[in-house]
Length: 159
Image 1 (cartoon, rainbow, N blue to C red):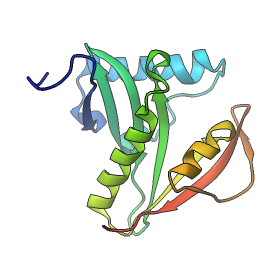
Image 2 (tube, rainbow, N blue to C red; image 1 turned 45 degrees about the vertical axis):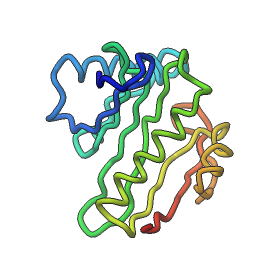
Image 3 (cartoon, rainbow, N blue to C red; image 1 turned 60 degrees about the horizontal axis):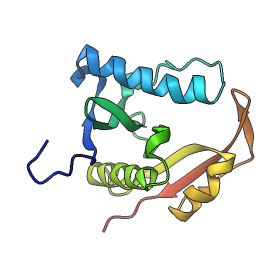
Image 4 (cartoon, rainbow, N blue to C red; image 1 turned 180 degrees about the vertical axis):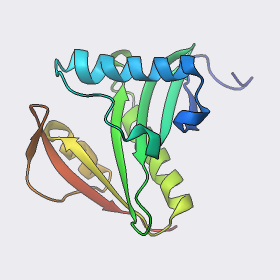
């Protein structure tokens, strides 16, 4: 922790899977499972094969993952980056961490590709939150693992 960092602030870091220690990878996957499988009572394949082609943003406090998201890199020649697995620990919700993570992700994507588009599949009940962040509904509602979702898109503009 930095001297000027408040003890309740999160330590943020961008990592690929290859950069994570086995212990950190375990903490990340256990955290995501606790949100997306247990809390949401949704049996699904959490390890979906996309983590290897992604950057992972992790916010930790005292060795515990409190928030995360991933940015799946587009295939060569494509400008659509996919944000997903956005999760905030129940004890840290309502404090703007989701918004903070999205802004960090957009800044990281924009730095690498100023003309990028960002897509995500928002749980329908969260679509208005994403709309306040500049995302637009980009298709029909669909069910993913029994949960209603809406595809959304945002064009990032340099500057």
